[in-house]
Length: 113
Length: 115
Image (cartoon, rainbow over all chains, first blue to last red; front, top):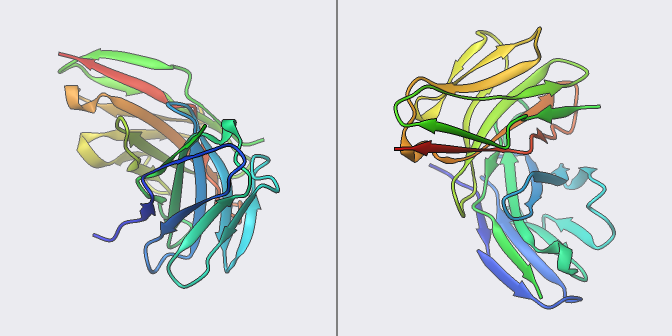
């Protein structure tokens, strides 16, 4: 069964450094999402992406964040200058159609020290 | 504004007993409703969804949920709980008029099944 994959599984970085989190959505999916979850807490929407552009973003998704789909498979989330409060699990998700459930990747645990 | 409420932070149930995890929602239009489960240190797994049709939907691992439009609820249920059902459960809703198809998430309910 196809699945969403994410790399790395765990990233440790120093405050102020740039990080890129990578996701490979399921190949025939059209809508892509990034979420974050601070340990054991609520899942928070960051951004949705469709047709090679951001379709919606939350207030969390400020100028420090960016997303790209550099080729036909990868979907990346970049944080330009990490802050301590960016420490969280970051989940990528994708869907083929609006009525479908979102398929989540296993997540990347980002630790900012 | 769209929102999802899971009024219980934690639900404790004895193994073999029925369980209910509550969810209520608020959207402008008609909802698409979802339940996801998260096991410790794992990603989110889809359990079931309501799009249209029968108000009672059945999903993975013996779970079911009932859509109640008048009460704007979508409670998750299972007739007989297993210890392995212990996990964090999230309810989510999408307004079908939302062209970005963003999911609005509840805060999660920790389900603890005791042997």
